[in-house]
Image (tube, rainbow, N blue to C red; front, top):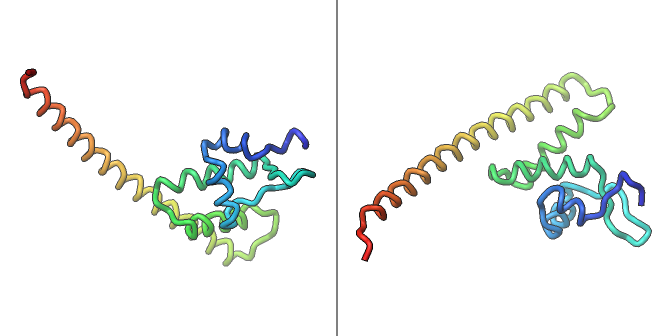
Length: 134
């Protein structure tokens, strides 16, 4: 195994994802290990880790596996060395803009939810502080 390849355990530690989650993402085609060892172990590169981190960051925002796949396909095409026709490039950029807008909206929604949750917790703390000790 070369120093540029990592086994799934190290990838799990670095990404803070479980082995099961990483395997699930492989089964769904979101992340395919770059190589296999002679013993059949999955081997990952830094690029694979970066891909897993994109998925990990999308998950708490509620993006579906299909949405994750669509974003990754768009970024893969845009990042390829292949010359893209202008209309395809613009369509891919528009898809990325849509994901950017959706992510920003979901972050704002989460901020609102967090604010409400903090207000509720503060209300409970005030109420508990008013209850005399037995």
